Length: 433
Image (tube, rainbow, N blue to C red; front, side, top):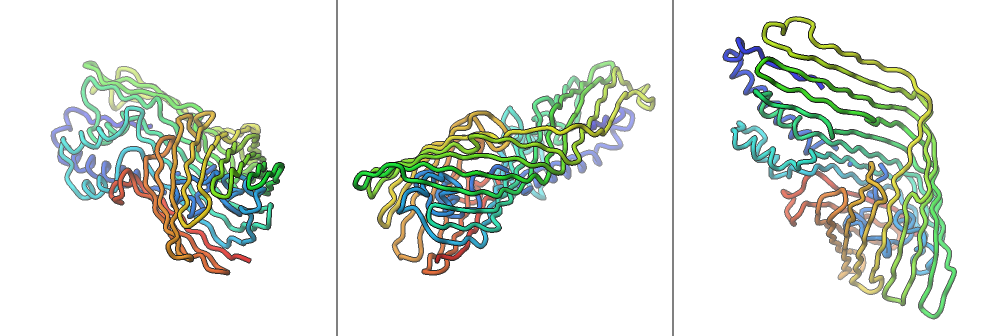
C-alpha cells in the first residue's frame, strides 16, 4: 500500500486537481466494485438450481444430483440419461453497492454528502468482493452414475474501510489509516468427478439411498495473502507509519475431494436429503511456488524532511517449498416436493469454517418451479444469509424430448434488478437420450 501526502506549501495550488483526482478515483473504485467479475462455487453452472435459489439438495436429479447431493442418484425416480453440452454460471458481487448506486454516482460530481453516503453503505468489517465462476465442459449422466469435468474459479477480497475513506477524502490531520483486516485470496482449478448413488432400503414408496462424489482436482493457480497489516497516521509534528504484505502464489498443483450424501424418499411426493461437500479434501501446490513480501516503515516525516529518504522498505520474491490447502467443508440439508406441476424446495446450508467459498453463518434458500406448459418451466427462488447477499432469482427454459436449455438471473433484496449488488446469471444446455 502506498500513501501519498501533499506538501502544505503546495496544497492551495493543487486543491482543484486533487478534487478531480479523488472524484475520478472514487468512480473507478465504484466501477470495479460493481463490475469486476465470486472457486468452490455452489453448482453455479446449473441454471435450474440458480433460478431456485440453490435449493436443490432434495430436488436435484441426474447431473444436478452429482452437484448437490449424489445420494439422489440412488433413487430410481431421480436418475436420468443426459449429456450436458454447456453449463456456465457467474456471480460478481459486493456487500455494499447496488446497481442503483452505480447509476447514481457514475459521472456525477461527488459532494461531501455523496462521499458520506458511499462510506455509510460499507459495513464496518470492510468492503467484500466475491467473484465466482463455474463452467461445465462436459457432464454425462447414466442411471446412478455421473461423470463431469468442470472448470471453477473463486476470489474473495476484503478492503478495510479506512482504505476507501482515503480514496474518497484523502488524508487529513490527526487521522489514522489502518489496513488491518484486509485480505485477498483467489484460486482456479479443473475438477474431474465421478458420482454414484445406491439405494440401500426400500419399503413401498419409501426409499433410502446414499451417495458419493469423488473429485480429482488440477490446480491452475492460487494467490493467497497470508499476512497483511499496516497503518499510517498524521500528527502535529509530521507523519508516521508501518506495515507489511506477504502473499503465497503457485501456478499448479493436484488434489482430491470427496462429497457424501444421504437421501430419503418419504413417499411419491416428498424427499429429504443431506450432503457434506468436501467431507475429505487435500490439495498440494507444487509448481512455481513463491512468497512475495513488502515491508515498510517511516517515522516523524515532516515538511522539512519530505525530500529525504525517510521510508525504510524492503520488497522481495523468493521460491518456497510445496504448500497445502484444504477445500472448505459445508453441509446442506433440504426438503422438497418432487411431484406434480408445482414443485418446491427448501435448503439450509452451514459451513464448518470461514474460508474462501464458505461461511460459518448459515444460509437459507427456497425455490419453486411451476410448469403450466409441459415444456416451459417457470422458476423463482429466494436466498438469505451466509457469505452471499440476500437475493431473489428467476429463470425458465425449454425442456424438449431430445434437447433442453435453462437460464437464470439473480437480483438483489427486491424483484428489481437495480437492487442487485453485482451480476449473477447461469445458462445450461444439453441432450436427453
